[in-house]
Length: 341
Image 1 (cartoon, helix red, strand yellow):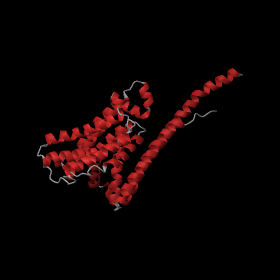
Image 2 (cartoon, helix red, strand yellow):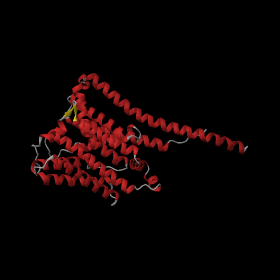
Image 3 (cartoon, one colour):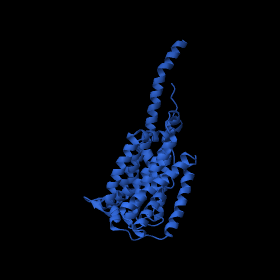
Image 4 (spheres, one colour):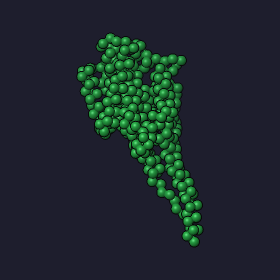
């Protein structure tokens, strides 16, 4: 009798495991499909009420804005994937832009000097953030918050709070120029997207970064160098953020101390959506999709004539939705019990 019960239990175990896996997959699909249903419903409603939303000129504006925001969003997504947070990405973008404008206008250097310096600034600041988190074991939120305020202070010290209005035409071309009727920032975004995607999905360090965010203890036990990879994630975030700031300054033909402040919330929203859309996989692709949706949302609010307060409300609400969806997805994966017969 006991032997029979033992065989029954043994035969039922694979069935239970299969059921558990199916339930987990179904839970992930609910979140993923729910996000795309939300996207589709939004586009349908806005297009019905404002047909100009899908007009070529408006889509062109959405594409340009997406290209500018995407870089800082990619950087934030990499840090989040590695289990951290970076509040300084917007200020890194703004600081790099102001450094480039300062070297071009006040010091009279050319692009061949100013641009590398601007990009290097992001790498150095990202390296500093990474050292504080990976070597000094500081909380990433607190460390990058401190960096954010330090950068604000440096910006005011560098410029006295004034705006740099005069920039060379060749610098403006980076933000406003086109090639084959396609904006230059879109070409840059495409190159950076491919490079970042290949790094995260096709290289060992990139895959290990994704593992750290999923299960840090398992990575440690498997011999992954968590400290170095955490450092790399912040360096990449700092480097990528500079593209957003520099291109925005080039597009606006000016540099000012608060240029990068808008990127903080936008980067978080797009990056969090990126981690949810494909359930932690293909994060860079998901972040690009999230950026497109975020920019479309802001664009639609503008078309509706809503006040600026609704832009903050909608972005904050979208961030909360992304966080809740991410939490729900992980909770379902970890807590679904095995069904017993």
